[in-house]
Image (cartoon, rainbow over all chains, first blue to last red; front, side, top):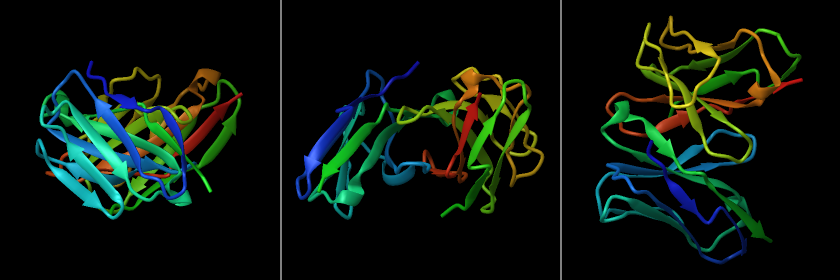
Length: 112
Length: 113
C-alpha cells in the first residue's frame, strides 16, 4: 500500500528556533494535510493543501505541497513550549475510497 | 468544528471481556472512522462508515466490529478482549465534500490485562 515517510522521527529544539519537518512518498497524492496531536488527545488539523506548489500559512506554521505531489513540508517559526507534540502528515488520493494515509509522525520536544 | 465524544476515555479490563467503545458526533457528518494508534505511533484505519447502515473494514485487520444504526453513533465492539488489543482507539468524522479534513475525538485508551 501507500506509505508516507516522515522525518525526522523526533527532534529537540531550543525555544525560539525554527523547525522544519517533511513527508515523502513514492506515490502521488492530491491532498496533503498536517495534524498535531497533544499527549492524550486526538490529532487536530493544522493545515490542508490541495494544489501542487501551494504554500499555506497558519500563524507561525507554514506548509507546502511539493511540485511533484510526492512530498510536503511543515515549518514552525519561533517555536514555543506549547509546540510540543507529535506532528503527522497525511496524504489523500482519489483512489482507495478517499482514505487518508498517515505518516509515522515527528515528535517535537522543546527545551525551555 | 465537529464535536465528537468518545467514551470511556480510559478502560482497564481483563482478558475475555466484551467491550464497546462509544463514539458520538453532533455535526451530522456522514463519514465516520475508527483508527487504532499505539502510543506515539502512526494511525491505522480499522473501520469506516459512509453513512447509516454502511460499515467497511480498514487497512489494518481488526477483530473488532462496528455498527452505524444512527448518523450520530459509531460504536466499536470487541467480543472477547485480549492483551494484543491494548491500544488507543480514535474516532473521527469528515464532512461530505471536504477531502481529507478529519475531526478526531479525544480517544479511548484500552488496556487489556
